[in-house]
Length: 241
Image (cartoon, rainbow, N blue to C red; front, side, top):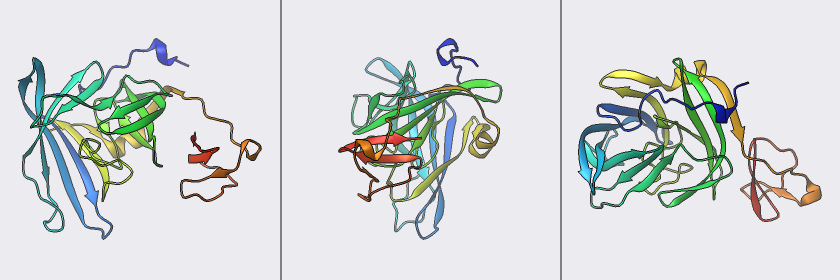
């Protein structure tokens, strides 16, 4: 077994890269389906930081949703595994992803707190990259960040910054592909089938039993049998994997 600390993960591609494009599938609860596309096109300098300009396009019908065609979302910059976004009307970087964080830590992303539960090294296309598993610190659900790629499902690339937590964005979203200059460099279905976990480290999980207090789910219902998820015991949230 290769220890996590002994391997320096090499990303398949930089997160911030000219010509990069993310394609998400989105659907509402009436099974209306459309694509949401993010693209990095051209560099810019903001307060001495070299950044890439981020654009957003969607194909959803309007109404009921707002349509965007090559809408300027701001600029992205990657500083040592921490990806920041700078809004069009601002010069202050706001954290969008943190691939350098360790399990057990709480990271403030936009206006939201997320708790890092697990971090794995995953082999994909012969390269090693980080898969960061996290849960929102004030809601249920669980999600993954992939280094160099972003969030896989439940939200889109800039969900936190848009004011939505990944647990509720109004629609269901799923990353389909990530491309650079027209070449597919990450495909979610292939990743789920072929990626191999090299090693991983998890945050310590509390031992939960009714001897330590009655256990409830996030709906306030008393729980007997535990499965993977977030629970409340003695007024505190506890993750079970």
